[in-house]
Length: 219
Image: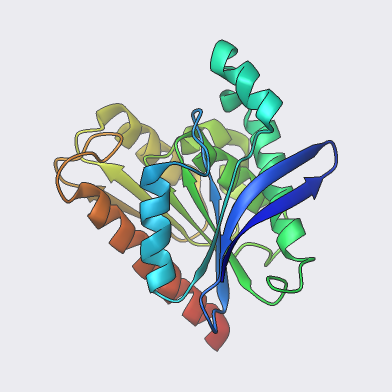
C-alpha cells in the first residue's frame, strides 16, 4: 500500500507519503532536515531499500507550506530543533492512532538537522515508543541535552570525507548511554553523491532496521 496522507497536528497540518508492504511489522518515520522535504531523492531512495526489506516508511514534511516559504528566505526554522523534534514526536503519536499503523514497531531515520530532531523525539517520547534510530550525515550534536537520554539503539552513518560532521558524530556518540554503532562510508562526502555511496547508506540502514525490528519482536 502506498498513499499520500494528511497529518493533522495541533497548530499544523503536515503532508506525508506512507508505504506499507504486505505483512509489515515495522514503520520507519523519516525526519528530514536542512530545508529538505519528503521529496528528497536521497531519502526516497533509502526508503525504497527499507520497503524492499518488508518494512513500512512514512516520509513526512515536518514544516507546513507556509513555514517552508519562510524558511527558504530565513533558513532559520530548519535549525529549530525543538520545533522539529516536537513534530517528529507528534507524527509518532499520530501513527499510533491510525488503524493501519498502530500495531507497528516504530523506527526513526534522520538526516542532517533531522537527525537531532529524531534523537530528541526518541528521548522525550514514552519508553518503547521508538525502537531504534538511524542517522545519515546527521547533526546529533544539536541534540546535546537529549543525547544521554536516548533509550534505543542508534546507528550513525557518516561519509569518510565529511570531516567536520564525522567529528561531531564521534563527540555526540561519546555522550550517549544507549547502544550505538558508527559506520563510516569510505570516500563519501556529506550528501553521499559519490558512486555507490548512497547505495551503501541504504543497505546499512535497511539491514540495521530489519534486524532491530526482528529482535524487538523476539523479545
